[in-house]
Image 1 (cartoon, rainbow, N blue to C red):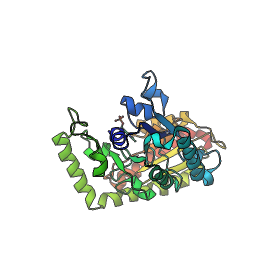
Image 2: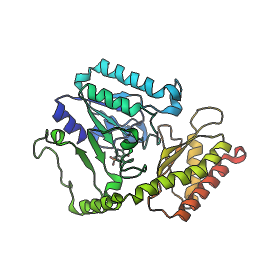
Image 3: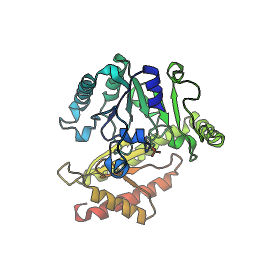
Image 4: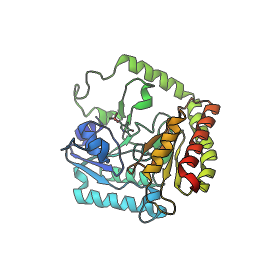
Amino acid sequence: NAVKIARAATGRPGVVVFDHAYHGRTMMTLAMTAKEVPYRAGFGPFPGEVHRAPYAYPLRWPGGAEHCAEEALAELEALLRRVGPDTVAAIVVEPLQGEGGFVVPAPGFLAGVQRMARRHGIVLVADEVQAGMGRTGTMFASEQEGIVPDLVCTAKALGGGLPLAAVTGRAELMEAVAPGGLGGTYAGNPVACAAALGVLEMLRDGGLLERARLIERTVRARLEPLAAQVPAIAEVRGRGAMMALEFVRPGTLEPDAELARAVAARCHAEGVVALVCGSFGNVVRLLPPLVIPDDLLDEGLGVLADAIRGACGGAA
Ligand SMILES: *Cc1c(COP(=O)(O)O)cnc(C)c1O
């Protein structure tokens, strides 16, 4: 729907997305999603006019983390020049990538993306489906990048477990779509909307945002010393209650998906759900509920630490 709104508002066809992006499973969002297996494989052809630029992924940036934002922005600029910036309706970006590996963009990258979008009259869409609704310690992950997107997509936590998704934006963009142009059989389901109002009420007093930031401090205090001892952990990263560990072959940046799977399997065996993500399948992500009690978080982190030590064998 964000793409439809941006196209209606600009009269332009193009959509720019990024490497490692996940935007969903409909045909249009599959065209925008980066990962082939299991999401895209066998389902093509996909809608056209989707262009992909590198995401400012500091750990894996060829020129090094310190040049990451600047060089990624130069690549985006080059892409826009190539396709013609006045053919692009929207730039769609996750302010902190989810399925792609909980990638926190290099500082300044998203502010640069916003400047470029504004300069060329392109609608900036933040996909906050996974990172939004308090997960990263602010209502929206975009806030921590100092950007104000033109359209924001939310879902997942928005409905507090009931199925609901939303596109929010300024009236002059939203009203570019004729009445009846958006909608659907299940759109605006009243029970799911009531649940979302409850979620917003709970988020409003700020207690849950503070909780998410506390979860980050607890996770870092526990996992950063461990990462310093375990050479297979390349990075502990994320924000708020959206934290992850990236696994590599020690001494290299070669992704170790097998180790990530082994760690997650050991956690599952002990009753802790940790999910693997990342374009290379080598990232273990933690998505604890914002309401998790301290003792349960501690216990879960203990299970994770043991799983890492066990899966690394002698190396840990
Ligand atoms: C979950 C998610 C979506 C929606 O994905 P579906 O699988 O289509 O429900 C969109 N964007 C992001 C960033 C997500 O994490």
